[in-house]
Amino acid sequence: MAGSTFGTVFKIMTWGESHGKGIGVVVDGCPAGVALCEADIQEYLNRRRPGQNRYTTARMESDEVEILSGVFEGRTTGTPISLLVRNQDQRSRDYGNISELYRPGHADYPYDAKFGFRDYRGGGRSSGRETIGRVAAGAVAGKLLREFRITVRAYVSAIGPVTVDRSRMDFSYLSESPVCMPDAEASARAVAYLEECMRAQDSCGGVVECIAKHVPAGLGEPVFEKLDANLAKAVMSVGAVKAVEIGDGTRVCEYRGSENNDCYVTDETGAPRKATNHSGGILGGISDGSPIFVRASFKPTPSIAQPQSMLGRDGKCHEETIRGRHDPIIVARAAVVVEAMTALTLADHLLLAATSRVENLRRLFPPA
Image 1 (cartoon, rainbow, N blue to C red):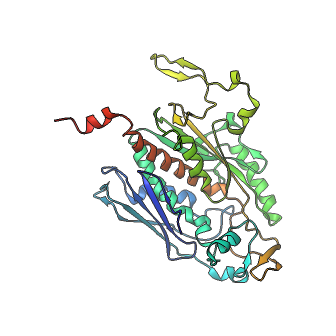
Image 2: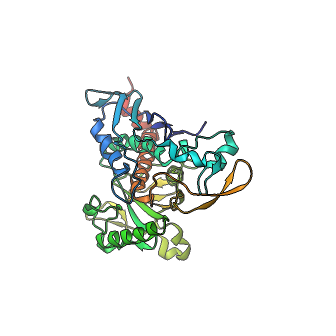
Image 3: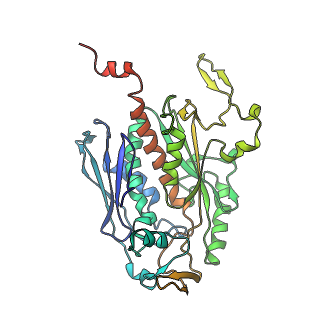
């Protein structure tokens, strides 16, 4: 299977299946000297860990990470960093009744059409559990970015019809919200809506937003490796994402040029800045020094407890119910995945940008 690698300089390769022995990632291209330990990575993994509350899958996994290589005495060595998380609570028997059926909304049929073979236990590589490798690698990227004061933070902005009120957003509340919403009132209404969905044996979708701050101007490679294009690819590669927006996204089609343009002003130090940020921090595919704003729309969890019509490998349709343990909503645990993919993209472009000027190379390698 091709397609399990991401990045140009800061490059990752994820591996493993939902019901295999473990999930992992190899991070290649991380510079030497970055402070890194397992606790740094575990902090990220704990945010996507299952079994945290009744709005996540009941699969109980500790998701404890092991650093197998690339770190010595608490710092990266510049060699590949190999990270492993062992699976502990697989219940493959839950999928026995659908081993010959294609679940609606899942990748079962396309995988079988492509490979002529599939791992039906939780979807194999198409399972949401695949994102463990992304999140672990994103934690490494986040540590590198913080060396340059760049911060990346994602949160849930909408669940079904419930949307956060930006005037009430309080990021200190994120750790208390069972659905990762920075608005206590919206979080309570979202939980009530989720309870309604669960009583109906149904699921719902939502929106994750991500903000990257202190990103310097000049990251991005025109024409085909634009920063916004690569961010869109990175976030769109997350299994349940169906749309990605940068800045004001689809709303810009409603604006006039005079409304959409981000005019320049100078701050108290005389440095240039934008009065508004409709562009989401990226112009011409290159960061402009403003906060970068990414929005991802997630579909409802396709595994629901209602009987559904499923296509069988025999070519006939069968009514069957999906068993097992599944999230009634994806976005609560997916926010950190969007954050990780954003961090990975920014780390890659940060390293790429280092070679964009000859004076950068002269500073590293002064002429004799």
